[in-house]
Image (tube, rainbow, N blue to C red; front, side, top):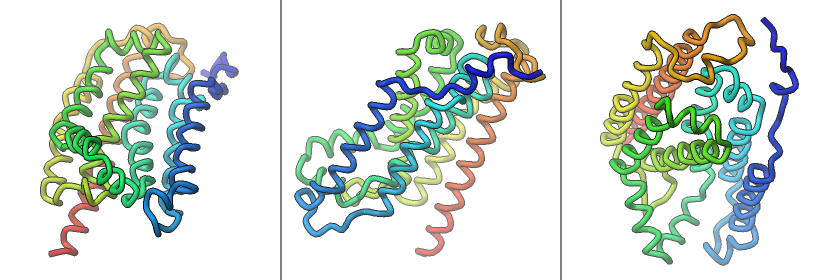
Length: 262
């Protein structure tokens, strides 16, 4: 069955809070790596590679929350919303972390020990891993999920909290900083396995539940030939497959780099 509301599904968000926020963030980044770079880290060349990663992160974030995928996930299909969440957890924060020049971060940490201490706490594997798992799980409980769907401000808070805790989760694995470097390869692998284990209960509930957990999708117009329960189970499968792909890829990368150093 084809969508009877094509305008809704072709809508790209242009709200000032979203577009303005992303542009402001990009402007600040451009100033730091451009005109102010010499003042912060004298002699440091323009980080061209990191800048491209940053641009990719900004674009992926906007595609997740500003493209028609957002309307599709909010109003019609649970599995589309899970694709959106996976982008916000696994792609955008990692790209933006790759976009942070390690030398600039280190200069900040050296000049501001208080910021380094705070980041050291927030990016500690136990704190970051627990924060990521708890926030991810919290927003998928029926009451909180429905509240976020119905309230735009709360929905923005949901996405930002997922993104920020995911950024912290990626730091112990992909940090470019020497002041707060990644953890050792062995603990990195254990960290990834622990994250996989921590997310399993939500995957299982969504995939094997015999009833639809979210009223939004139970009453939503069927724009494709799929029942609400099948949609929910598809969302659980999407989440699990994405988690497996990311986890196995990261574990493989860690093992490869570790083996080269031995």
